Image 1 (tube, rainbow, N blue to C red):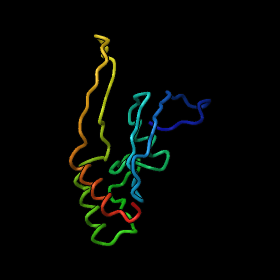
Image 2 (cartoon, rainbow, N blue to C red):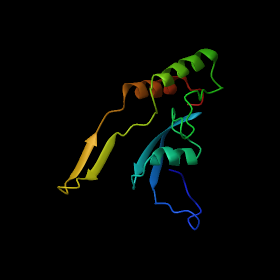
Image 3 (cartoon, helix red, strand yellow):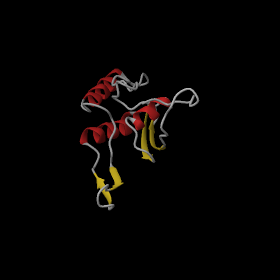
Length: 131
């Protein structure tokens, strides 16, 4: 559950994540991730490695208190409250697809973004000074 460059010294399994920027909000970025592999914590590890940890991820550096210093005190307070409402990480699987191991059928499952994440993103659209 780490990015390993020295494969001569350490063994590692390949993990491939394609990240696409959907929106930028100054200190925050909304990303879409498409995975070629399914390693444990893959998205969290890769985002942290490139310096963009998932909001609310204590293991890989996405502190809930990552409040933008360019915002006023009231905005900072509101943003902190919205991030607390996440009750975890700002990470959501909109769509999962895989081949069923027994039947061989391709299966796809979709789920809308949780309301707490939608509220946070909408707030950033309205309040982030860079957006």
